[in-house]
Length: 89
View (tube, rainbow, N blue to C red):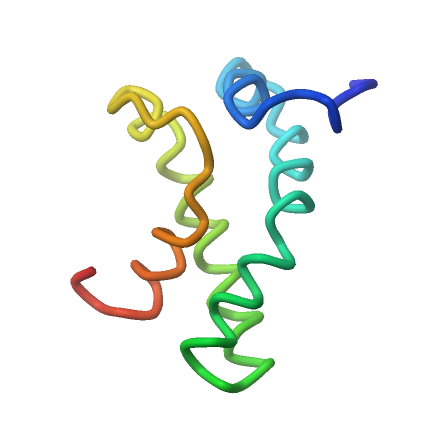
């Protein structure tokens, strides 16, 4: 879809939830550097940080519908990284 870089996180999530799963890529690209930096701050290891960032994005994708129902309007990658890095967080 064209112009996706200008869409808000909420608009992209709505598109993903209405069958345009490919739009999730835009969210990942938007937050990948931040996710990696946050994960690296927790681990001090680039390979582990990549794994953690990937897991956080996967968890976010799998829970988009429930996050949306709970009123979460934007990606909170910091919280997702915490969930992955710190069990029980």
